Image (tube, rainbow, N blue to C red; front, side, top):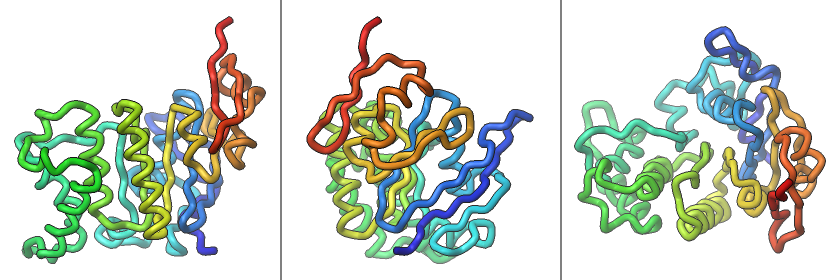
Amino acid sequence: MTTAVDAQDVRVTLGGAPILAGVDLAVDTGEWVTVIGPNGAGKSTLLRAVGGLLPATGSISLFGTPSDRLPRRQRARIVATVAQSPVVPAGMAVFDYVLLGRTPYVPPLGRESAADLAATTEVLHRLDLERFAARHLTTLSGGERQRVFLARALAQGAPLLLLDEPTSALDIGHQQEVLDLVDELRRDRGLTVLATMHDLSIAGEYADRMVLLSAGRVAATGTPREVLTENLLAEHYNARVRVIEGDHGPLVVPVRG
């Protein structure tokens, strides 16, 4: 199986503080890997480093090519990122924002093709956003904007999708819709997903494999059942939880003291 992401000894220092302290990560093509960990563990930093958005030492390869050798335009055809808090352009309509995902395919000084417009329309339809197409982004609720951010990334058509807390602003119904759609695209298109999530039960429902980060290092890796254990969560989250076996993965339930 081809390796989509191969990161070795990745280190990131921000403002003089070490955020990642030698992280190794491998994600196979078509796999869904979710990175979990307490606040400040370095989850978002790891995704940004993989996406080429932060300077890092060590080595990161994407589909066999060293990341630092990928021109920006080529990288955008390989990796699509949904950040926690993307910049929302003032006065931009939803359709135009999602259409920006097609930028890597538009020739310099050229215009979007009919295929670009069709790809944008299809993604809006699949995420139930068609009725918002003419609305300005700033008029939408947080959950609606979150789906628009995902729509732009999906419109990019990249084989690697980086999702940084993709459901943080969504209600439970839209959480399921969005994650089910991503999982469907993963199966249909061979999409590779590398995500971060705070909700451990939801993370365990969808991930093939999980990576637990703690203090900038990998503390555990394996299937959700191997990583979501009461002992590991107590040690690294300082949390009292009970882990219950669910239909698709372990369910993490907080326990009052």
